Image (cartoon, rainbow, N blue to C red; front, side, top):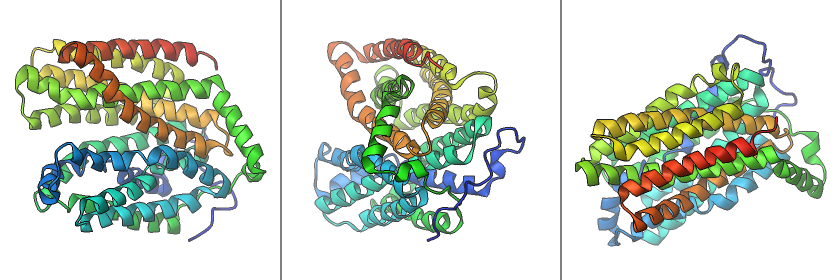
Length: 404
């Protein structure tokens, strides 16, 4: 495996008119993002078969998701620290191999405890992948080209999010274990990253004493803008996992007796609009600051969620879902771009990896928090509460992100 390059690749000239898509290394980072997402949605179509094969309950099968998600709360920031102090590639390449081998081995599991153990190892390696890809993008680009590259990476993520459920469903029709083999794709990606990707050398500031490094990371996290971005994104993930992904299918079934295929189409509408909008982030940030995009997107978030229970039919929920995706296409790349701007090269790895930890916390807390609205009300109450929460988070974004 080649060491990190001695000098920064000359990709950061914000005055250049060349599209970052001309950089072949950027496509390698897109591949990292693609293999790193979807390892819940790609295997979930096989869950009914997993229940039958292993003789477990439908409650127990949820541990396939939990075992994958929980380890990342710890592993993401640890990988970020390693990336800052050892070098991006020296952490990214072995992480890709561990992810691919452990994930592929899940297809060979013949007992449920073994499957859960392998999913936990896979989850440990999965959590840092997207954050490390964005970290390297932040290292390689500056200005509007950085925003454009982050936006394109978000598009790659959304393409994967939209495609993986259908791919997983088709593979599960062959056998329950075939979707679990998809992470094997990470092995050739890891080999290509090791061979071809240029990454900057470790920043001298990060090679100082570990206490000094932690002190400087702490200073970054105490920066109101960085803390505000992470806090706002926690709220965004609560809305995504607590209201949108969890309860939109329930809303469609309860109100319109819609089939699961319709629910999949409605959810996919958000991925499509998010992917399309994310491709324009580079242009938008030339006119509107990332923090303004984040603040405005949260208004769209709240409105879209509140409109869903008012929709006259499945098509109306789909239109609101499309609008919701527009908000995600604005806030995620804008937020990631802003985090890269506010973190030094010496701390960028851990700051962006902490964003992955925030995602998993939102994934855990969101369904429980919005589920309280269902306990005291109806399925419509969930979406009105989520809409109000979105506007509240938007107000918090104005307060927390108001400084330059």
